[in-house]
Length: 422
Image (cartoon, helix red, strand yellow):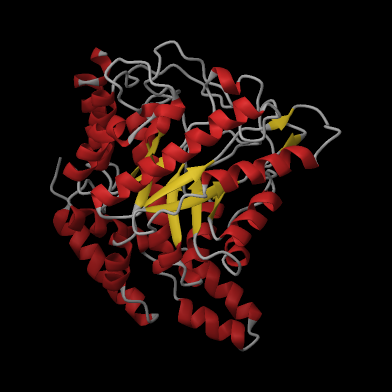
């Protein structure tokens, strides 16, 4: 292939000058962009399988469709796939890990007995990659979750099992954060809910609040662990009622000073999380985002450069929220190359942030303050055709990863040499 460096550098010089005419510093935008880590979700690489059991069925209302060859079967294969994906993504990022990806040396260790030692392999790998980690208790795909209830379960013994799982996972998160020198966001999501309309909506929510208070009772150093709670409108098998609704968790996060997690697929199809960011951050100190792409329902499609993705990035940047928002991805597609799915989604998230950082915001704010709404709309539309792609290609070049579509050939080679042999 011809060397594109000269043309990329030339295009960037022109783009930089054009943005400068609008008061935008393209070099500063790239510097800010490099400081924003995206938390890559480990479960895209193996279809949310985990390593507890080779024949474990996926539960909790989760569904992964497709049977594309090359799924990771071991921790080493999954880490190798992540390394390949990271080599094609500009910037420094994080890993988001579920408890079900513990390495127990072939021994049966139930989830209430997990320890930091079961994640030493992941910690060592992340340290070698110079990246931080985030963590999630796994409240699904387990016999004690088969009836669809965990922390709100009416049986105190089952509920207690899941409370203990939450407690040990917070300690694991703190150990991860301490070992890697950056806070680990430990996020609690549970699948609890009813398929049909319940008679008692209050009881499960009271039990959930009590269980969460038990889990969070142990004080942990926020330099090592940050607690988040994640809401949802509905799920498969919980279409009529979800215990941990948006209203429940917004109130809980505000009252208990926790991070609130907003998942882009966890609301009505016409409801967007970009509009919630500025409201939520009036009442909670920090926010966790699980960026996904729902198609008609919470289908967790690979993130693409949609209007909503751009709106999410705009809200974060416009509001000055970058220090208060943790960005993670959450999707799983087994119908395409899994490494490519990571690369596509993460690069699109970064592109959306770059677009937001390159926005001629000073001009737009002035027009809005002056009541010049016609000019504001016109300028917003003109900004969409500014030469941001030239800045993106240059940013990739600067970060040592393939620019444009060149990364696709790298994934194809990896599929031929590695994935196809599994």
